Image 1 (tube, one colour):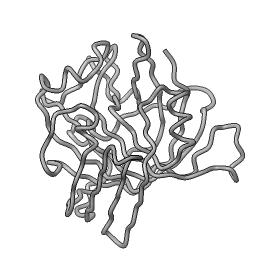
Image 2 (tube, one colour):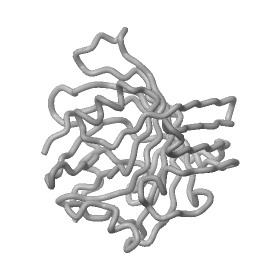
Image 3 (cartoon, helix red, strand yellow):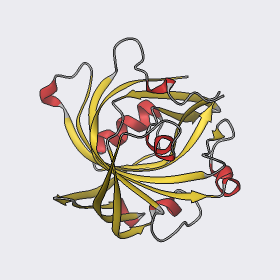
Image 4 (tube, helix red, strand yellow):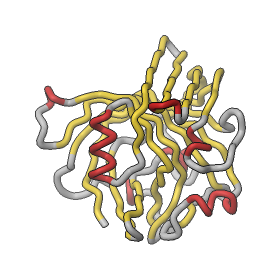
Length: 237
């Protein structure tokens, strides 16, 4: 039995760092689990909602990032876009990242060394006015590009447990495989305050660059959140 609420509880002890995630756009496509299974490590199980598997792209702003030992005045900012799916390990639900693009070389190096996450450096931009937003990203050397424009639409509020929205958004664990061993990182934050979003422009090469099959020209589901303050806890086997 998967307990989807337990990971949202704050771990005991001091965090490893803090950050704020802002202006998140959650784009999702439904994908047949059999098509997705070969792209996820065998040590992890696919997590599905009523038998439905999903792949997501999430562009957002990383703000006020700092490890716990760094004074606040040295915190830094960057943009990020991740390609993800949902998995379980020992019945614990979390996220598996196919790729993460970031506009900070320091963040890319630190995350690859410290967390073994597949980060890539990219030139990225974000613009917003009122309810209209757009993100642009291009990996160095033109390896993969991504652009999306969207409009914030209907306010949904925090996701209700056992709903599809709760399944997609309220993820507090990440899993990464290193040399056949599974490691888990945890974050803690308040539930997302969520709106639906209307995607007005979309072009993506990140999904196929990660080796995944080509999905629809536009996401079938799109949601927006203004952001959350996040505590990050150390990754552990």
